[in-house]
Amino acid sequence: MKLISHPDANHYAYPLDLCVEMSGDAKVLKIYYLPFGTGNDISEAAQAYDSKKVHGAEIEYHPDLVKNHRTTTKPYHVSQPEGPSFEVDGNLIQWEKWRFRVGFNYREGLTLHDVRYDGRSLFYRLSLSEMFVPYADPRMPYARKAAFDLGSDGAGVCANDLKLGCDCLGHIKYFDGWHTTTDGTPIKLPNAVCCHEADDGILWKHTNFRTGHAVVTRSRILILQTIITVSNYEYIFAFQFGQDASLNYEVRATGIVSTVPISVGDKVPFGTVVAPGVMAPYHQHLFSLRIDPAVEGYKNSLLVEESHPMPIQDPKVHNPFGIGYTTESQIVQSESGLDLDHSVGRVFKIVNEDVINPVTGSPVGYKLAPSYSQLVLAHPSSYHAKRSEFGEHAVWVTRHSDEELFASGQHTMQSMGGQGIASWIKERREKGQETSVRKEDIVIWHTFGSTHNPRAEDWPVMPVEKMTVGLKPINFFTANPAIDVAVSTQEKNQSVLVDGVSKMNGHCS
Image 1 (cartoon, rainbow, N blue to C red):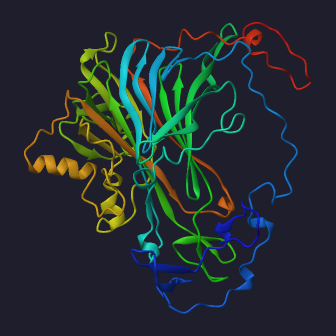
Image 2 (spheres, one colour):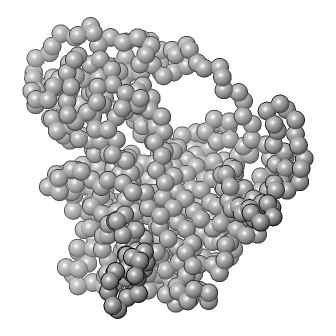
Image 3 (cartoon, rainbow, N blue to C red):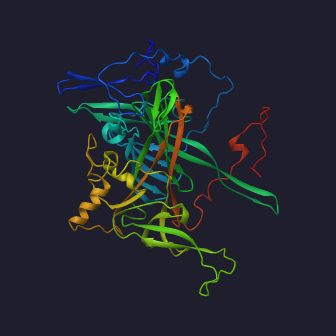
């Protein structure tokens, strides 16, 4: 609800205190009035509106309604006088030593295919498989509130039309998304994905303290980004390719927190009051990144490595000063869910056991650098938990199946559970089907996200919250793959001192 006529007024500041029960033919059967405190006191009688819940401009975000803007930020231009370094041919992108194809569909939105570095195969397919947002307000009817933003809404359907100079900076290549209506009519979603380069700080550097000579190379990354709006929230999804053969997947959450009414002056233990009469319930954002690897081929394994201190005062081990530690590795044999453990530095490596690094003598691989996150908080008996099986573990490994693309199953709308990763594994075991994942065509699923207990600073629009998952080569190369990236020079970068003077002093030494 909103109280002013401006089309972009913040109606989340005036959450309705009623819930309508309707028949299948859209007739109103009953009106329920929602609870205002910690009790489950649903009523069929309306209460008088509290005038203290009427707000001013402090709850608005649109520039037409927020008149005071800082003037201290000066323009920032991204200049590439020779144009971008990437090449595009249809949906094929080549940049530095990377080569891959861009895909897009109504449910997952942006997908990547046949990802290669310097001609070597890395990943068959990368995609965001699912996103689940369970809310923690235990009162009725709020206890039913949980959204599958991909399975029930669709990341592709909700994709923004990205604007030049706003959503992406620099030399931009846009990719349109295409959908069809129920009768097959094609619909174009313009500018659904943007592609551009960005400076990412220092890639590598060393100063020889004996001579004082420094060598520094700045990092350039290629970004493939899409943004979706799902009701009140915006999500920014970006694949970031590095010159060192690393690949990051970054998620940023912003937008407006979902709100419910509360009595002025009241508090509840499962939410934050962000304005008089406005409560933002606690909730989680749980993402499932689907990684379909092809590390030097399709027969891959998942290796779990941990770092443990060496024993002290053990006659069989030489560690007299107690400072030694070693690693312990184990190959996962069967489909399963696995958890993170920072106490032992648990690392997950996707390896090809049939391709050995000639320097290390170990299998070539890529390491999952996870986003450490709290898993689903709802009780296992709850429908929140039953419907989001992927939230049970941080990492899953399954055998590849063309039918298994979505971590919570094909149909999430009002699902009752019993579909998704855990159910697939259980069903195969019960039927005696093959569940081996060693030297097989496997899929890795990573669960990560945010436990969002709203702050006053998240109102009326929250600043972005960032989550990053990394995929890094581990013993895939025989040396630093970015050693051949050109050294940074002032002649090329043309930085300027604050006083406006540009010093051309050759290499950055």
